[in-house]
Image (cartoon, rainbow, N blue to C red; front, side):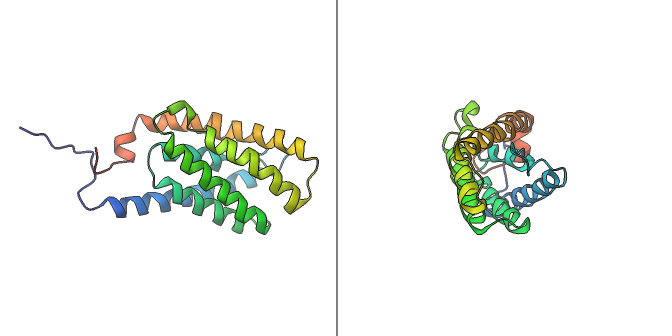
Length: 174
């Protein structure tokens, strides 16, 4: 007798589930960005953004890719970032999210794509959008901030969520 997986999403609900997950991830990204800004953690030489920990979520669901992109885009708009920051910061986030999803078979590599994407893009944005120099110093400080945000906080989040993976991220494939 075949047993039914009670953790799977009901058939036909996958598109709606993905949309809801993406929207919740975007909303959470925005809220966490505002909290980090309120605490002054996102405006220093080494920026620690709690929202960047969410960049490991494509490890669990592809719905995180558009969710992170929209969350970053709206966060940058709402916090008054310069246009190049809004555009290229959001693109760096979606590139990092996409490659995290592609590397999902390798748990320990989950934070590497967002760290790399932001370490390359954000220092250039800081230079050209805000005039922050020297560029080499921005490469170092942004990379350190991303290692803390994505590497440390993100991996803590990944291990915490992994225990509840089938409940939080049900799919038709389960």
